[in-house]
Length: 338
Ligand code: KG4
Ligand code: ZN
Image 1 (cartoon, rainbow, N blue to C red):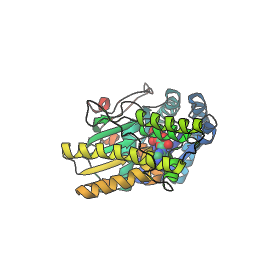
Image 2 (cartoon, protein in one colour; image 1 turned 120 degrees about the vertical axis):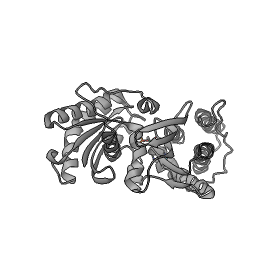
Image 3 (cartoon, rainbow, N blue to C red; image 1 turned 90 degrees about the horizontal axis):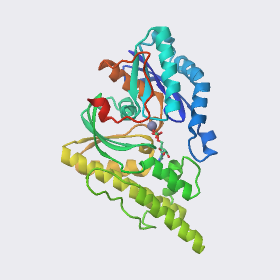
Image 4 (cartoon, rainbow, N blue to C red; image 1 turned 30 degrees about the vertical axis):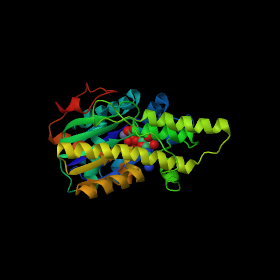
């Protein structure tokens, strides 16, 4: 079964064709990052306009690369939540038009469910149930993946998402937006013990995360150094910061896995590309005899394949949308699992 998956929730117009939920036949990503970089972040109005300009040719290219036409496609999957509303609406409207004109089923897909599904592409043996750490630019969750379409979020960030924190710290250290990958590269050259940064702490829920205190600590250290005219060890700061974030994400995930009885762990979202997070998660899982699954680097960031893949499982579960489908800016995974 072939699914055309459409993703436009943020700054990537991405469309893919997958077969039976696991095999990627094409994966086209039109990134707008060069334009948003000029403003230091994603400008929603520009994102919507670029999606509108790009979506038709991206769809055409995805079909061509998969060597098929719309006649070969069995269903159209589209990200409808969460994300930038104007950006989501471009993908949703395009998908609705395509579904209506070709009389194909339309399947609404949750963006974070899509990130979680990115692991099905690279790991044919991965099947729910398992525990997944999802860390992206907008979300940081520890999720029980109960089956292919039911989730329970057991931990979430109380403030900034991990990726957001990477980007803000990167900006403070003088790196371009989005700075996660620059911190990752710099951290490889620095000493993770160069700076003693506060460990993120959260009162109340044992699996929740918090990154704003850590972010503020880095910003204050850098500004104080600037005022005193003392140099900042950028690589050392990047390494110390990355090690602290990785430790917080991985420790909470291990704690939740041990308490809830999971021995299979997934990692997903843009921050899953981070080498420090990947290495520490692998190490801690190996120590406990847990099996760990991480997406290939090309499926860590936003892409159409993950939406197409999740769309297959949502299709099998009977999820369908009609011409009234709308974009939703905020929608939790728990809300779609009832
Ligand atoms: O999942 P994603 O592509 O978009 C959202 O759904 O938010 O995540 C983007 C985030 C950005 O904050 C970016 O800086 C971060 O993922 N990111 C990284 C790395 N590559 C991307 N963060 C740390 N290390 C990386 N190597
Ligand atoms: Zn994403």
